[in-house]
Length: 290
Image (cartoon, rainbow, N blue to C red):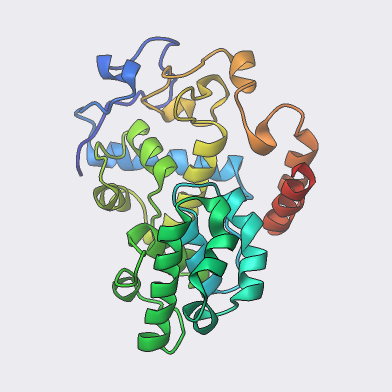
């Protein structure tokens, strides 16, 4: 492990009182917590997140590995919502690697422009599609060692594709996952590859993909970067960073986002009642708010 941190298993840290001076700034702190204790606490957090987000899922819309690969590349430095808004037109125009490899750069740029960095992303997508056609007969490979050789594809993107398109366990370390892994004491590292390795030590491979979804869901809804809603957090009892954000329950509730935000109770009820349709329900909800 890159480092362990103190926890208060089974009880919340007092509001406003950090377990270490580093907590006030959100910096990781080293502790003597044993690996076994850390595993037990980490897995309890995972169970609590599973109870809170039984509808957690990949928030990029896709119907096949190629679409997910392209959407994940596009998601860099933008939101999944933005990507989901442009991919229907994108895949209608370029449904497979061969079509995208032959795309006119200007036409592709125009479609993906809302995602930002569109010129660089266009170059990456055309190069990626060309490699798929030349080396893999237009088919997205299902191995990490192959995926990471593709233009614009790193371990994060590869693990997203493996876990969600091929059912191969992987830990997806994006900004949200890295932030929460440090706050939970699962790692001290800022390096995505080291974070992936540290967290992998704590969980069984069968849990990796869903763990990634749950942690990202939690980071987007509750454990925000600047002001986490500690007072409304379902894992506060096991989080060594409790007190970093708002601890008053009423005030914390106002910080919640998406289906957890005040006024979205009907959406939350629907997601909880129909977890198997979570992606469809989310897409419909987003379209209504556009």
